Amino acid sequence: MELAEPFEMTQPAISRHLKVLEQAGLIARRIDGTRRPCRLARDGIDQIDKWLSQLRKALSANYDRLDAILAASAEQIDKRTAKRSPKRKGKR
Image 1 (cartoon, one colour):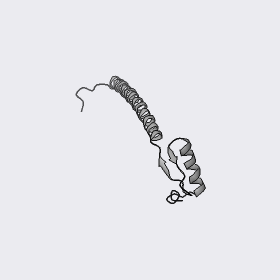
Image 2 (image 1 turned 30 degrees about the horizontal axis):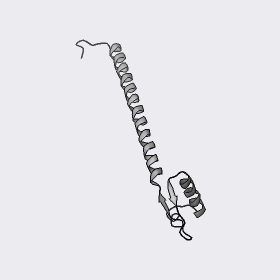
Image 3 (image 1 turned 45 degrees about the horizontal axis):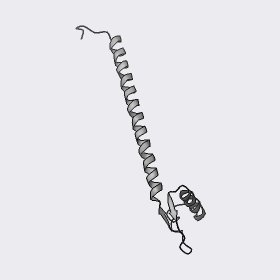
Image 4 (image 1 turned 45 degrees about the vertical axis):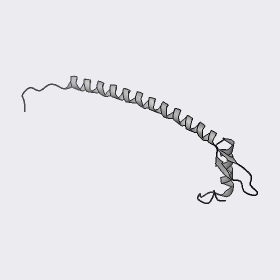
């Protein structure tokens, strides 16, 4: 019940979520009388951290490629604009 207090969820919904987290290896539960204390599972958290690190690297590489494409595109637009613009001589 303690875990459900801060959330607008029922106790059964919290229990289902905890079961999913336990099956995923993200938390560990033990039986202590009528209580079922939970703790974060270090191995599961370490795996998530590694996955997030890989995701960050992939996203960074994608953003770098996008930056290069946008820079090249802007350069082409600048060249086209420069070719189209007639140069005015002395008229003001």
